[in-house]
Image 1 (cartoon, rainbow, N blue to C red):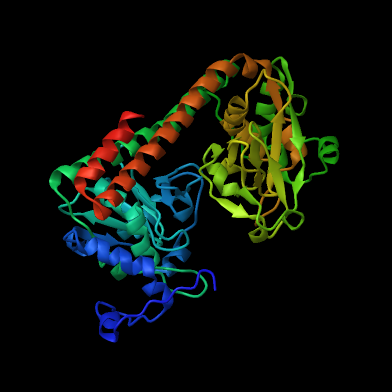
Image 2: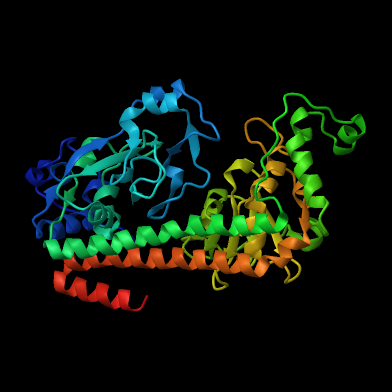
Length: 474
């Protein structure tokens, strides 16, 4: 049978260093045993010996003691990991009181963050440049390194050998989960100070580069809002207001939120400027991709709405077989702007730049916009749709309590002033600079991880030579 493998070990070896007496095949895969052998050659330390603390508030019942909110202390979850980086876009928040209650789960600079459930094994480092305080849920372990660099530790844990160690640990039949004691016993290979310092430097550089992405997005947003004369606009919040019955009947909506003054005010402000509605500047693409009609082995990049938390859908997304996709999808092409109609506050809006070699498809919850001219670039359109004025409109257009959505017609009716087109070249340049920084950061971090793997499999000298070559080409 293709893919069948057998590991044969003495019972004494199976039970050695096996706290739960695990006998499952996952724990004894050949790749896991090979990784153990490779790591053992480099004077490994258990993680608990290179960390002063490994923390998680752990008590799931505590989640009943607070509510999420749109502003406050950022509350990181597994969905905030994007590859090897943390993305604060769309992060939920908690109150200061809830933050105090969850003091064991506070995120502090220098901690290594490791996902324990869901996206098990996602790794990142809490940077000095983040805006604190920050908290996190019970499924993210906070590792406080002691005598080892946070960045070297993160690079190793995110490397192939670190991930193999982590992937053999999860238990559970419904949702896989690893426990703190499992994390504490992970084996960390140690190398010379010079080598670990170089890996740490490259990894930190990658994280710092990645921080430029939100900074440049903020810069692009500020430039565009200044061009519209809305840089200082804040939504009004009156306690009472009235709307005409004729407007309610025309909109086929009787709920008060649809007629929120903030929404009406910003729509009037945009409509007062020379321009035209979004529907005149884009085509809404409704082309469907049906997996049952595609060859089972056809590969596609299948983007979920959470992928659009990052403003770029690119080739980083792993491919899927058509046979493994269970529902109809929207067809995506380079230059499209994918807009999630779910939960507007998450700002799940992204430009598609994945290349044409492999087809791209996305969730049916996406509204797919394709600019019908060159005056407004997809990058500028994405910044405009993520801006506070537009988000205010979409927020008060939503309908539904469990899964609030806004309609395609409400999105397409938003006025897009000509000033957006006039600022498009500058906005596009800033956004593309951010996309380039993101790509550079990813390649540099991949190089640091690969260098660790080379050091484990070959030598420090070979790893240092590889890292120098890769950095020289960036």
